[in-house]
Structures are given as structure tokens and as C-alpha cells.
Length: 115
Ligand code: 5GP
Image (cartoon, rainbow, N blue to C red; front, side):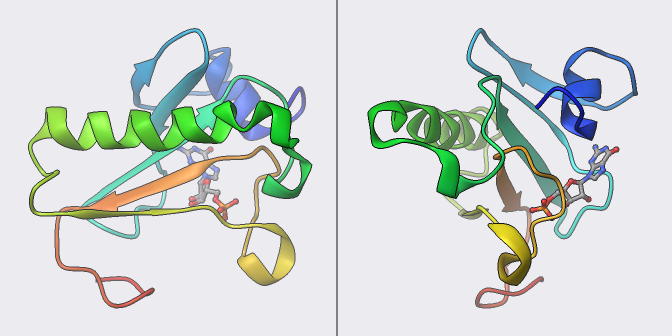
């Protein structure tokens, strides 16, 4: 991740609204939100895409999902619902090559689209 935008956000080299951080991951508001709530959860371990995460490090992905669910509960929208998305490579629409999970919420979402 050493040369991505997300690395710069983690190291406070560019501003972002960081909403959560622990020893494994951090989360911040997306600069171009696609829903009323749009937060990105990013592991501190360095994987460019989901394709690069080995099975023996599956916990990296699990932690992202659990952190997103905890955030949804803490913010009070878990029961209303939300969506988590991971884009991978060109056809998936990935633009930042550090694995991350999008949390989208705050309104009814179109099926696999935006509100
Ligand atoms: P991807 O398209 O790779 O799945 O998601 C990358 C996300 O990062 C996009 O939703 C984009 O809006 C967000 N993003 C890109 N640059 C920045 C930035 O400088 N700050 C923040 N907060 N989000 C960014």
C-alpha cells in the first residue's frame, strides 16, 4: 500500500474523515459518496486486490466485514440495513489498488446500484 492514496490517508499525509482505526484496519468517509453513508474500510496489511489475499490470511477480509457491521450498529443503521462491496480490478471498477470494503447506507439502495 506504500504508494496509494489510502496509505497517505493512514499516515495523515492527506486529509480524510477517519471514523475508526485499530491495529488491523482503518475506516474513513469516501470523498465521493454514493449513498448518504459511504465509508471505506481498509486493512493495514498490504494487498492490492482481493485476488492477492491468501487463504491463510482470510482474517484480513473478515475483520473488514465485522468492523463495518460494528460501525453500522454503533451508528444506528444496522437494523435498517446497509450494503458492503469490494470492487476488484477493471471489470469490478476498482480504482485504488489497496484492498478495501465499501459500506453504503442511509437510504434504500437500488439492487446493486446507487440509491
Ligand atoms: P474503488 O473504486 O477502488 O472500489 O474505490 C475507491 C474509492 O476511493 C472511491 O469510492 C473513491 O471515491 C475513493 N477515494 C479516492 N480518492 C480518495 C481520497 O483522496 N479521499 C477519500 N476519502 N476517498 C477517496
